[in-house]
Image (cartoon, rainbow, N blue to C red; front, side):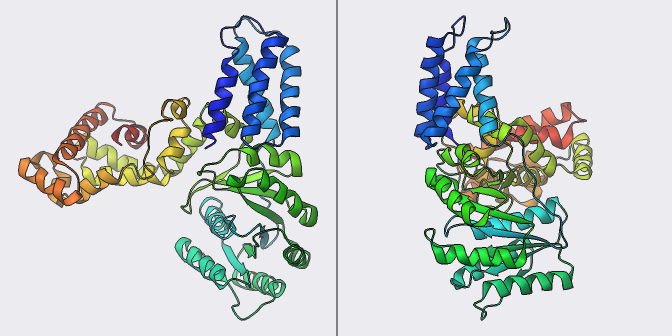
Length: 442
C-alpha cells in the first residue's frame, strides 16, 4: 500500500538526518523532495504546495527539543499534516433511521457492487445489524446476478425486480420490503457508467430525492489517482454525498486519491477496501494511514484484527492440549485459518513498523501458507495428531501428495517441533502468543 510514496518520502526526510538544527536551507531542500514525492503520487499540485508550505512554516517556527533530532521533528510534522489532510479523525457511518438507508454511488468498475457486499457483511458481523442488499442497476443483468452471488456468499438477502426498469420504484419497494421483514439496514447498489454523464447523475439524484437516505457513499477506485478526485467532485456537486469509499488499496496505488480527496470535496473517507475477500474492509483512520505512508506501520489495526479472531474458549482448549503435549497439526491448521482471516500477508506485514521497508524487495505470496496447508492435508489423521510417527517413507508420501519436497516436509516438522516446545514453555499465553509466531512459519 503506497510503497512508492513511502519510499520517496523516506528518502526526502532522510536529508535532515544528522543535521544538528533546522534551518531554512535544509528544510527547503527536504520539502522540495516531499513535494516531488506527493506529485509523483498524483496529488494535486496546489494541495502538494499548500501542504509543504504549512509544514515549512511550522518547522521554522519551532525550536528542536534536545531529545528530538531535526529529522524526527520533520517526520512528526509531516505525519500530523498528512493526518489533517486526509480528514483528521475517523468518521463513523450514520445508522439512524429504521431502516437505515445507505445509497451507493460511483462509476462502473470502481468496485461498487462488491463493496456493497463487504459493507453488508461488516454491518452484519461487527455491528450485529440485519442488512438487505438492493439491486438497482437496471441496465446490466450481470450486475444484478453479481449482487445475488455476493449476497449468497455472505448470507444476506438481495432484493431485485428483474423486469422492473424503474430504479426509483425498485428502491422504494425494497425499503417497504425491509420494513415488513425486519431489516434494519438497506444498502442500495445503483448503476454506474464508464464516465460521468448527465443521464446517470440525474437518475441517482432522483433516487436520492425519493428515498432520502441516511448515508450516501461515493465508491472510487484508489488506483485511478487524481481522476478519482475529479470524479468525486463531479458527483459531490450533483449529489452532495456524505462520505467516500476507497477500493483496491491493495493494488498498485500511488496514494493521490487518499491524500487529496478530502481537501477537494470536503467529505471524509469512511471505509477502504484492502482485498478481494468479503472481510477486506477497514474503517479509514487518517492517523493510522499517515503512519503507514511514512513507514511507521499500523500496530493498532494489526492488534484489532488479531483480537477479532481470538476466541477465549478455543484458547483454553488449546492451552489444555499444550499442557498434555497433545497439540497436533489439526490444531495448527485451525490457527492458520485464523491468521488468514486477518487479511493477506502483504497487508499484515505492512502494519509492522519498519517491516515494509525491510521487505520491499521480497516477493511475498498472496497465500503464504498454501505449501504448509498442502503438506498437512496430505497427512493421515494419525500423522496429524502424532507427528513423531512420520518416518522417511511417510515423508516421501506426504511430499509427493502435497506437491512439495521431502526437504520442505522436514523443514515444517522441525519448525512445528520447535514451536510446540516454545508454546509449552510459555503456557498462559496460549492462542494469542501462537498467533504472534505464525509469521515465522511462512
